[in-house]
Amino acid sequence: MAPNIKEGLIKLIELQKIDKAIFDLKKEHDEAPGRLAQIDATSAEMKAHLKGLEENRQKMLLDQKKKEGDLAAREEEIKKAQGQLGQLKTNKEYQAKLAEIESLKADQSVIEEEILNLMEAVEAAKPPIETERQRLTEEEKNFAQQRAALNGRVKQIEAEVQHLEAKRKVAAAGVENTMLQHYEHILHGRWSVAIVPVKEGSCQGCHMLIPPQVINEIRMHEKLISCETCTRILYLEDDVGAA
Ligand SMILES: [Zn+2]
Image 1: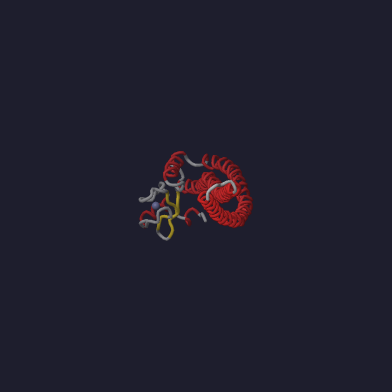
Image 2: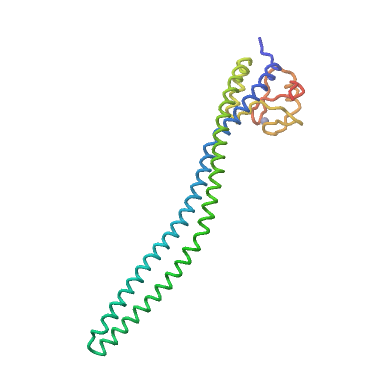
């Protein structure tokens, strides 16, 4: 006995609703790891930026300490040279020692200037670090919420898919076998849309115009009619009473 085409169409439309819902949920499910990775990447980027600011400040601080050491060393050298002044025998040696002391003092003022500049820079580096640290703390809260929401949604999707797949089994069991095979073949090749209505004369799968004689064939219910362009099964909403 030939299968009842109209009844088959109605059942396939019902099956299609379930399959489309499963497809969309699975797509959303598959996108979740990428979205999680994106959150992690943004977080890592912010942390790296903060770390860079902190390291830069730390570097300047170390440089400042080193220069403070240099300054103290010059101070010692000056004291030592000044101590030697009294022991010098000739005026020439005395003048040379004085010149050495002057040179050391000149070095000192250069180093002092550098230390002052570094102190200013170290101080100026503080507020942006603090701002960035606060921003990161705030953002980490957001990231944690986003991760929790995503993970929650993934679990919800898994439950929904499980429920829909059970529903699908029942719906598919009601469809005549060759029709089901035909439907499923198109389904897998066509982004999970295997059966579409004709609206205002065009296929709602690929939007190509459907000739009037094909529309008449659909109404005849002799066989499943496919769109010549996208191969999807066609139906008419008023024909099958689907909304
Ligand atoms: Zn089409």
